[in-house]
Length: 330
Image (cartoon, rainbow, N blue to C red; front, side, top):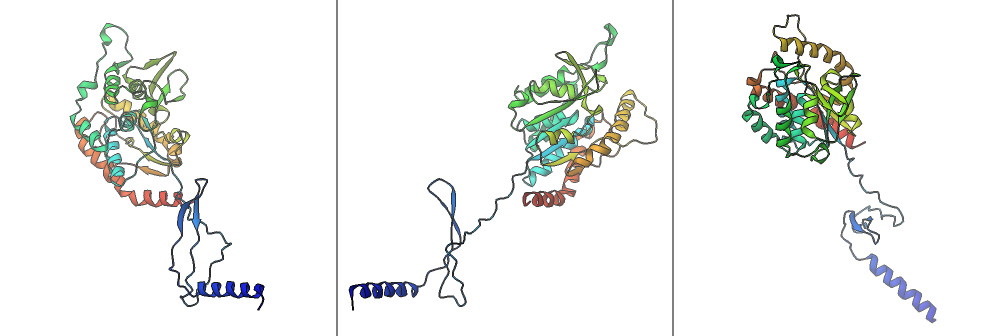
């Protein structure tokens, strides 16, 4: 036998010997390639397994696609003392590990939204609500000594918010946050995303006739509920892929309002219902806590409002999870 034939025979023997060795089956594993990019290791077929089909070494194996990153937006509507329900909503979401990436609030929603965006947990927000003395955020104006466009100045609310967020401006909060107000001159909505957090919340919460309008620069602002009672569109504009909207506005009824505040809140409810007919359609989930006839100045029922928000959120939790799962798998 020539040297050439001997080499061929030796190589054939080595190949046959390798095929006779059982190789354990291993699942695909991610390894780091030299350029830092995850590389997929192709599984090796087990020849000892009957009817096993050897893997084609030239066929690429696709890695399972990573779930799509979804930005969750929380749009918190206005409704004065009914806004305590927002805390219950956040509490229920936290319990299921759902954390909003963007928070936008109008009026009472801007108050809760700012404190939450600053990093306060639902449990902390709830304690703040129970400990809150409404007198501490009520700084009465003096209409008897001159003109006044509101019975409350709003400076106390501004100070309270700024202290609670540790005097951080909006852009320094832990969660991207926006507060919606109305430009009194042209009626246009404005979204505050930078600057003094307390002042933005104060502007967003300045219910005409209750709080004095807020002057910032050359503009005068009042409550955002006039133009965006539940700020769904602004939440989308800030980059949210999935929006949970919370509507706490009162339902209009065929009974006459008694007090001045009730007249104002009834007016807001009428306007808000018309706007919400269009805006709430843009939300992926709409939560409407069952607050019944709770008045906007009913601070005594804050505990019931929180519980109502929590119950309403839990009632749609399966729907929230299902929609998020479907969106992530797209």
